[in-house]
Length: 432
Image (cartoon, rainbow, N blue to C red):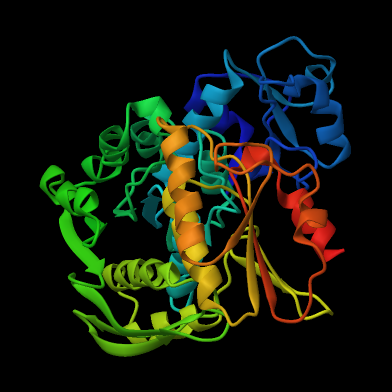
């Protein structure tokens, strides 16, 4: 999104220092900044002002600043009181300038994969932009808005939640026309007092929708379905047992990739996904509901889903030369997503199945959550190897790759934990 530094300065209540210049998009990461962008130095664990020189070396055109810095003398700067708040304000300004229909996506499980599938379904007919990876917070969401091409017709924004009021704040910036809630599960329960608190925090998305908007809700999750009473927008539901968009005849292939029929207000079709996990069928149903709400034909949306991939470290399968399958699902974890991943593991063709599992963070009852996952693994015949925690009831391994022993053709290994556990290192060792 192109704009003048003077426009941005007025919009965010800043003070322009230096000549007026045009910039195209923003970045808070000097490793990813593109020529001509605005650099936003975030003050957090590291002070982003230390990297302003690196930003200009990488091609930045202008920067925000809330501190005295040497670069404001020789380059164009916009002085603000707080760079993070200014980024949110600039995101709201960019949203007001955009004609795109905005889709907000949240949920305890599946929001990133659902966001990816929504983008694929809509991209078949509309110029579509979506968050990279999980750019779903007060930094990533405005950056996504401001980096969207000016001709974007559908803007798909994942919205993360770690406490009350966070989704409301994101909605003030994004002003979504469509809101999708995938599930309410045991994620971040420590911060909101349990699962009912999660439901209340996720509900902020549908509460923010305009009357002309559309809430898209999972009919199979009673807490999500109940959100229909908390919005003045139109409601579309999706599910297996009920819903306006309803899936049936679901089967999985040898890699646990779903094939299913779908009935919608716009017709009936057959869907084949390229991503693994029975739960992906529900994510795809949500995507079809969004596409229909935005006027994309059912046939076009289904074609878009057929080749769709999802963000990395989410049910990402690597087949080794030995025939071993390694499932990288290390981006995040909670009891609900663990159950879905274990179900996908046992649905795949295999000789032996292993789950290398790490800590699930921010649970209000971590002992119970980890025990339930361990019990499910045992019931499914999956050998569990714990890493970094004894909450699963088994002694954690210091060397999970060695604990797996000699692997061969037909063995399937799932690796999963909350992001903070860093189990992608285990995936790296296995795939090397």
